[in-house]
Length: 293
Image 1 (cartoon, rainbow, N blue to C red):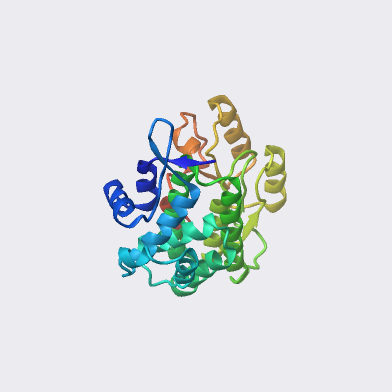
Image 2: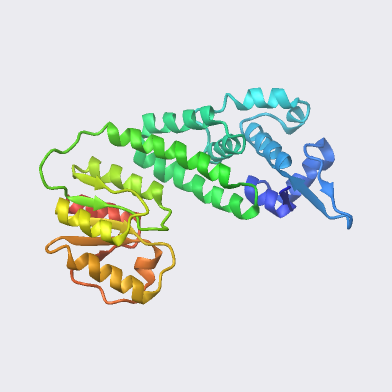
């Protein structure tokens, strides 16, 4: 069983610890358990309930009224909060609740409303990336497990893929970008989002996917003759192996560029070939695409 300290509850919900204690004492909003040494702790159910309370409270319902609601009444009210006009923190809290409950219908509905009204790019910047940061903290705290990560990833991937398919395909012969992830890299969402951005900017894209071996990258380069090859290096790799990898790719590119981003690309001290381009972050990558489309 996952347990939380009051500090964990504060960080995950955004409610100050002293406020949580007041709500406990005056309204019995949450009833913490105690260890044999009298230290209070909270459970997943406590966290879920606190997030529900926060969402109702920030949308005008008095805490005294919330305290009188049954669990079914709270869930009924929460189910109405799938609209885009929620405040930023409320949006994230609602999405966190849907993830905890593995509620694909409401989670998907919120994302669809954002994408329809403000587009995928703003949804990624304003909703999905902040949500992923919050999920990362929840993962460290222990409240999210592998099933939650898989649940979120699969839904977001489907949304991005749908947007990709809705864009017009460029039909000229030579693909401009060959994109992929090496073995062990886990940035599937980032790669898929890069595919969307490239296609939206009128670039032809060949997406090899993930867990691609170097020999297969070189084979794809020889077949497709791309103008640019893009990948992400985040996972740990020693400098000699990284140098050899970069050299091998660049040697097979002739006049094309090898574009890299990710922690290893920006932190490794290696000798970069002339046709290697290192981009620090997503913003720089988008600017490069727009400049060189």
